[in-house]
Amino acid sequence: MSELSDEQIIVAVLKGNDEAFTRLYQRHFPFLYKYLLKLTVQEDVSQDLAQETMLKAYLKLTTFKGDSLFSTWLISIASRLYLDLKRKQAKEKKKMKQMKELISRQLNWNADKHGVSWSEHFIEFNELEPQFKVPILLKHYYGYQYDEIAKLLQIKEGTVKSRVHHGLTKLRKDWREQDEEGR
Image (tube, rainbow, N blue to C red; front, side, top):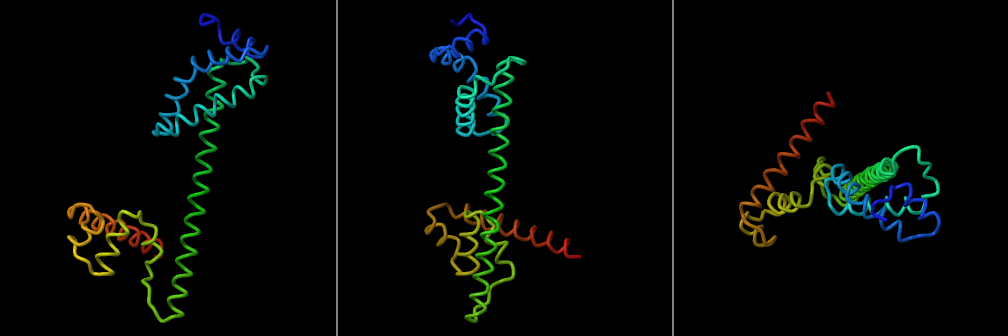
């Protein structure tokens, strides 16, 4: 069956020969995977999307009209799945940002209610990645020394210094951008 064309194999699949689809899968999966890897730059995500594409192709094979190459049809399915994933991730990211802002506002409100003052930059601080946020908080709020933070986090002291520096640099950049927008 390996010398058969995609169209001939598809006819066999539509007649109930599931083994024929295995041939299509083996023939097209590597190509799909490489295509998706170029889009995602993540092996596991590319693997999942390629498998999902092949599953969708199997389930919807009766809708393949043959107006294009089978590989082109697979690419269209894979592309839509990739774009759907990106939209879903963007939605989740937006939702997480809104949730963080809400929690930050609630913390600020509760702090004000109890006479505790928070910096006006608390929201931006909470948007930092954890690897930057933790060392900055330990250093500049709780007063730990770099060597103490390194022991607490079980990382090198130089890594702590670097993370504090890069985190503060990012915060300053964000604050400058906000000041420029406010003008």
